[in-house]
Length: 449
Image (tube, rainbow, N blue to C red):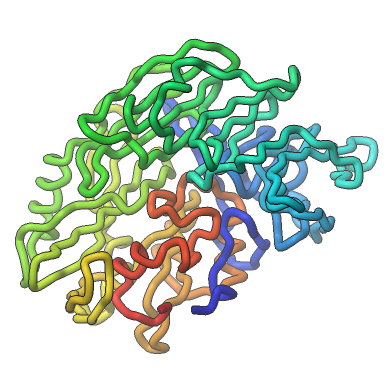
């Protein structure tokens, strides 16, 4: 295993030079307006994205690279680097402050700090004037969002207790809720507007008003919590089902939850398009393998799997227009990019969650991230016999393999919640120690193991 091979998508974004990769990560509101996200070469709203990784204010993009905090001009040019001891990742930025997490400090303490952005010095970040915001010796749980911050509040899940914590930055105190104390386990949180969405195993999906005791249940799953959540900052999307995909839901920050796509609609679509049958089986399990939002569409990567002998594995990307009465369709070009070039199944012996077995792979990789302009994929290069990063250009329809540096540049302006967060890949999105079973099941080879 070569850990140096993997990008740290959340902790380490490095500006690349891939043409067409710089885009914006957008949100969708009920009015159809674009919101959130960051754009290259122009001014953007403060704190454009949230949830651990890369953030920007009106002037700079901030991210962590190794032990350095990098500030890179949105207008282009060389970034400044500042060494920050124990730096783990950036969790928020606006025109006044940049917030970041420090971990494993001396006796495994976990802290959140902030450094000022000085307008009189050309909006320069002054890490030498950093100040401690809070400390939690229990640590921050590695749920998809890590630590969430909006400049007024910090929310996270305590690592050792699974306790929801909400910290008022101005008042310098926690705002705890008795109802949340009774939850058996909270698996995920996400700030969305003036609210925070909370996924609890025993109570389903909750919406809490920041700074208030106002809590309401917006979705109750039958026997599991809606863990797989995708947020754009103004809207929340999630898929029911833990082992197998059920229905897909949508809830605006201030509105009511509604069922967006039923599993029967997905099955009917794949049957009509001829994806539900293969030479090995006509009965597959459908698993959600990541949701992405771009261009007013919700993209869902469907993992079609059949575990009974003969075993088979296939990935199909579908999408739905988020406008009223939007059409559900198969993204045939993206799906074709994920298929083997020879358009035939590839049989590989794999040691996976179900023990050793022969699996026939119809796919050669998977989608990892989307921006407005591109889709980053991780694919088998069948000529070089190894897995590589590849970039699909939505404008031209072209696909090409890219270097690790170019791939990280492609993700410069993107939000963690448009990644394969539901594979529990933690901040190192393709860190093999964290994702062995999941990635091993999906990739049609044993190159990375």
